Amino acid sequence: MHKVGIVCDSTCDLEPSWLAARDIVVVPLRVLFGDEAHLDWVEMQPAQFFERLAAAKQLPTTSQPSPADFAKAYARLAEQGCTGIVSIHLTAALSGTFESATLAAQDAPIHVEVVDTKTVSQALGLVIKCAMAVREAGGTFEEIVRAAQETSSAMRLFFILDTLDYLVKGGRAGKAQGLAASVLNIKPVLRFNAEGTIEPFKKLKGTRRALTELAAYVAEDARQVGRVRLSILHASNPGLAEELHDALVEAGADFELESIGLVGAVIGTYAGPSAVGLGYYPIG
Image 1 (cartoon, rainbow, N blue to C red):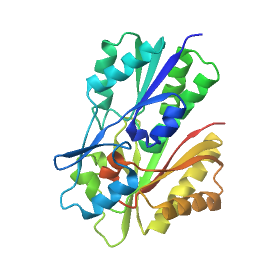
Image 2 (image 1 turned 90 degrees about the vertical axis):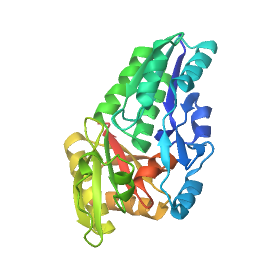
Image 3 (image 1 turned 30 degrees about the horizontal axis):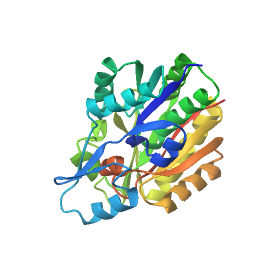
Image 4 (image 1 turned 30 degrees about the vertical axis):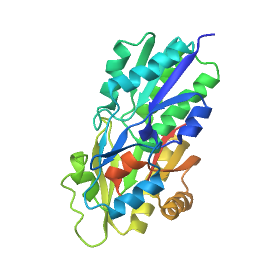
């Protein structure tokens, strides 16, 4: 039987130990406080990051893995007997990670299919988990690639920010750049579009109303497309994540909860503290 390797990057916000236990190789991005660089999820855990962020006088920056970082991962999997690799990554519209992976794939000793999921964080994690499930079921290389691509195309990702400052200063605001949120307690609700960039969804007064409106949207969407598989993400604020879960239940959303997970340092650099959101896709 052909052995298929799966590679991802750290912006999937899944624990490296969890990924390693399932034979998935993660290539981490870096977060930089001045000249001090840390590997996302490896040398900088979310709780540590948000503590540093609160005290930082200057906002951190991030950097993508190099093609050499991916080349090492691909070569190692080839040495372990893989005959093909599916490399699954965050949206190319907001990071050069996909490009680095693509460059490395051109010279890899075995065939590598690089997938631009056009999403990030726990939504990216859902795509990886879907590809993993197909591999575990004995799927072929082509079936694993197709699962990753189709899940990516069907994925929805929404998030509520406490402030737009981090996203704007980090240069990732996209179409949300001009979203006025200066009015007292206005909470921007954003989403990733089909191009993998960020756009405004709604701006609402107060976090509770934002949670309620987002939950109502998911409930209505699920009535149209059928039951959805869903992961909730939060920036070191489990209370908000639980509130969003409760709002989904109260709204009558037809969903299967995959996980409630943290936002890591790289995504947290742009989302900022107290961000909360969800990614989901239809399953029937």
